[in-house]
Image (cartoon, rainbow, N blue to C red; front, side, top):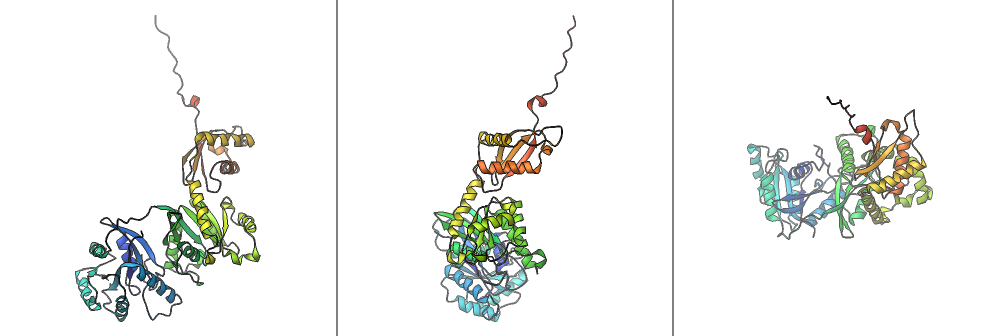
Length: 453
């Protein structure tokens, strides 16, 4: 059974995103003193006094804006209101009651869910008196809060709990896998996410940079719960225009780090760009399993085939040559769920642990095929290997001297391990460590003195 949804609404720039961050006690939504920063529905799961609910931040309600994305933002708010179990109507005590607040109140009177008013920016007792100005909106209770100073947090949470539907023992389902969906601007990430969710969960627009926050979307497949993270599209660093874009870039990088598997979307109608290559290097550096997703495949360059892309991407992104490739048309949901199955397989590979005996059989075979060349008088020697971690599979080779092994030989061993062990399509971490043989570790024997007669 899905968790009850608590939705924060209000006019632009009253502190809705700050309120979500305050209640969650972590920075989830981007906070910026600029109207219209939040566009999609940003959500996080909250636990308070044993009850669980999904807390959702929405874009600012403005019925007169001429913004290019205004209709999309309004549609996302409508979706959230229809699904809400409780609504938090955020207002600003510093501005007082405004005509737009009254318009929003009029709209909310048509909603069935209980509504409570959170009078934000009540930073002290004097400012909190301004909350009384909002009783004329017709909703109670009115709770004076300060998202900036976490003032009124518990009062607001208690009020939410009092209005949640009867408890049914709900708790968030265990997440089987977190998937970060990344790519450059306008690569089709939001369309892909909506295909996964089976609904218009995030705004899809031809306007580059529509997605700003990292948006977590839960979806189910084959009885398992997954989290897909839609991220802001990346572009060249010198083209980053403001703080909002900087935070979006930072969130995208954080999403890669916290994901189990990355889906790297590449725009089929375009050539691999410098931004794509930089993003590929970031994924490689984080050692995350990755699926190269050729997006908008129905618009492929010169009607290229999937085999053409395997060859092309192998040359364009050599650092990810081990990664599997899938071609999708997200607007038709073609190959989208197959891509999730592929990601699940990668997660299984990166979580695999092999026995020391199996590992050393592969190492011995590799040495027989190609013995490490000697850079000098001392012959490089591998004693044995062992796997010490997963995610990524981490293998330590104990050798006589790590400095004797060239990078080319390390790559040869990595390829051999990937080919013959059950993680052929995920990054491996190979560590060379000096090892002293047992005979060398023993302390020198002390000379025995003859006994006196």
